Image (cartoon, rainbow, N blue to C red):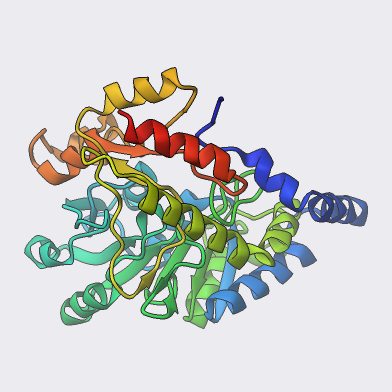
Length: 363
């Protein structure tokens, strides 16, 4: 049996007729940028989350870049975030000239809120809360620190569409929150896409202007903006998927529960979930000390896995200029050497999952 780590075709096949009908509808309409599909998706996604405004943009990284720019965070400023995140989280800060300041993760793969205050300086302007692997971060503690020091909060929800912290959806806590709709995401498009969400109407209006060359009226430019627009076809695809997102997330929860109950190998550390949260399980990530050996043994049985992420941002070539050395973030680095993403996607069959479980238990 051959089992891929991810299968996007399975997700497409679930609602193939709806996707194809919507694609043809948009193509035949003849309006492909900033039209009624984008406007409708923005309203529907904002309503789903329970926020005032959603602004569709080109991708998740640009959502982060725009968010920090509009909050006035740039040269000479610092933003605190966890070390064990995808590099895009840090790039969204650095592209504005600000400095990402990394702290260690907690046991749930999110920022250790007890380590934030020790990193605050007179240059600190914001905290970036990343909801990694679909696991909500401890937002109450993050907001308390932010309020104490008058810091902005940006949420990186790229992997957490529909996740909830104490009954409230992530993306509704910070000053502004960022989503990616990359095809592998829980709410994934069929190409690149992203969005900003906020309850700040003024910030939302600035975002709509900034994403479209700094213009709200054609050929009238009120600011130096950029071109970052969610296109009509992707918005249409997202509208279809949004009607099914709760069911898709529920399936992922059931898949995670099956792994949780089935894997009994004591050498494999299963993912923990913060109490009082609803994870949407973007990935199912275990930890194992002899990762390369385990990966190879699984590959020998036709089971493919992935590593999210093998090189933490502070040790990447891109951020050498920050001066971090190996050993500066030992827990982050330990996680980077141990994390292993198992096959996990909508449409993964019970037979396939049981095959993975049996292989893991026999290693």
